[in-house]
Image (cartoon, rainbow, N blue to C red; front, side):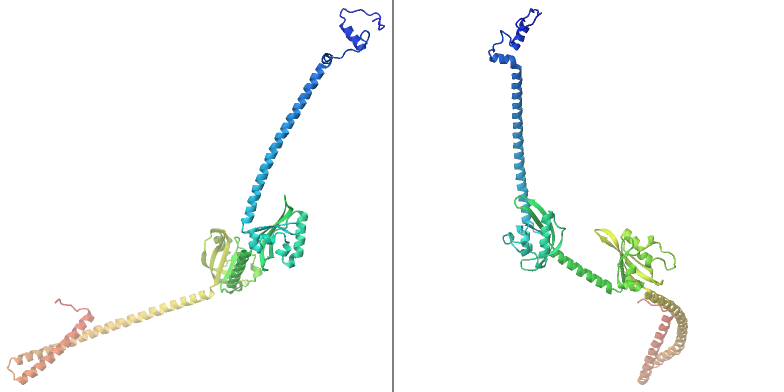
Length: 449
């Protein structure tokens, strides 16, 4: 304390704090540089060193753990990538196999300049070029007709620029031998791993469809010709009774034009009233009933012409089906005015004929009664006349019998024989006349033999 000029300093009992203070202040005898040892370092900085070492080791462990985790993640990602590549390869192989083996879908792949980069088997079938002939050549030289070169070139450029395909539609392309090929073509632009941006065309052969459409058009033409030449009126209606078609015969009978009927309610146009002038409720219209229950109806009814005249018709209402469901009705009708007039005329003739038959029957009855009376008179006359003739004839036969008993001469016997034969013959005739009279009178009796 004196060396340092400290006055009034009381010497403490414990010198260690003073010693420590003197050492820090480098006061004699501690002004000489101390000997530096590891123990001093440990004693002085042991805690710091241990803490730093612990922190370093901990950080190193964390780095190692992070590296291990990153390595594990990397291995997982590599495995996942390998699995994805394997799956992608398998998927690509499957799609390639599908593309190569499908015969109904022609698939071609093109680069930005129109060069063919992919050509499946269906494309060879559709267009006639093998993959070896097609790949590496321009689609304009292969399947595009010359008149379409410019438009196709612009379309390809637009699709590659906008990375999207054009709307699908029908196209007429060209076969290897030059004939036209009808296809339904759709396009898409995709990024590929090996060739970059590519445009794929998917074409469906429409030759069979075109043939079916042609057959359908011919069938429709035949049906239209039949409808136009048919003598009966025919029209179709939807489920609400709105007319969808009508043939010329129907228009001629109704007096309407086609524009006045199509798209309008047939019931409101020419089926609105009964024959007596009362309103025909739409709910009772046979078209509505058939559209509701699907039953075919045949009936006689009345239609009204455009000029307000009614005429009787014979209707046949048939439902039309689409996918098993009722989609509308078809009605055929014919004017039966002439038939009804003929029926009425025949009815009048029938009544007249019945009156004539009754009159003629009465006349015949009178004639029959007169004939029966005459027949009875004749029978009575014959019976009386036969009786009157038979009595003297029996007397003659009796006299012949008596003369035979008087020993006649041979000449007399011959004469008697002739008289007897003639008399017997005459008697047989009279008996027959009497039998006829009995038959007419209903009094003949048959004897058992």
